[in-house]
Amino acid sequence: MTDPAAQRILLAYATTDGHTLRICQRLQQVMEGLGSQVTVTLLAHADALDLASFDRIVVGASIRYGHHQPLVAEFINRHQALLESRPSAFFSVNIVARKPNKNTPETNPYIRKFLKSIAWKPVLTAVFAGKLDYPKYGFIDRQMIRFIMLITQGPTDPKAVVEFTDWSKVEAFGRQMCTLQVPKPGAA
Image (cartoon, rainbow, N blue to C red):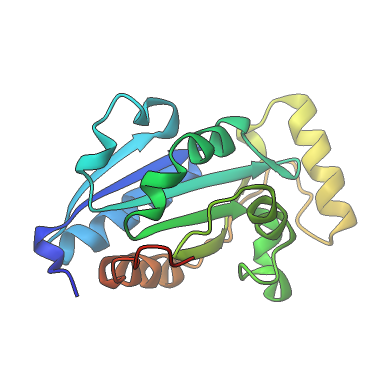
């Protein structure tokens, strides 16, 4: 096992409304508490970094209307060999994960679909329920999301702000990321 104090970890994220950044910040607290050096950056800025200098890489992305931002798959495809050469992970943030039968990588339809669409097989995956913040959304997004919530029996009050994130699950993911073993060459 690699000593967490000697690890440099990159948390690269794509967010729509900012909640994925909050999750990365909590992961950073956990990982730094274990002695790791953690860099948090927007995925759009990650290519400007020396990615090979990181011992571990985590990619996190939010869902909007059933899809991750296109730059998520583009980044992963561009850096697949690097991601496969070290302990690396992927997490998705979506409101569907608020439901007990859709809150794991094996049961969440969005992360399952996304992972099938890319060649990279992360060593660790997770899905976290996000935050619903109607007052923050523009008119069209607010109406669309309210309609989706109506269909899925979620909150529809246009003034509602509901955080569904299980922070203990986020913290457990951070601890697990710090203890992942280095992948063996050719292992998938």
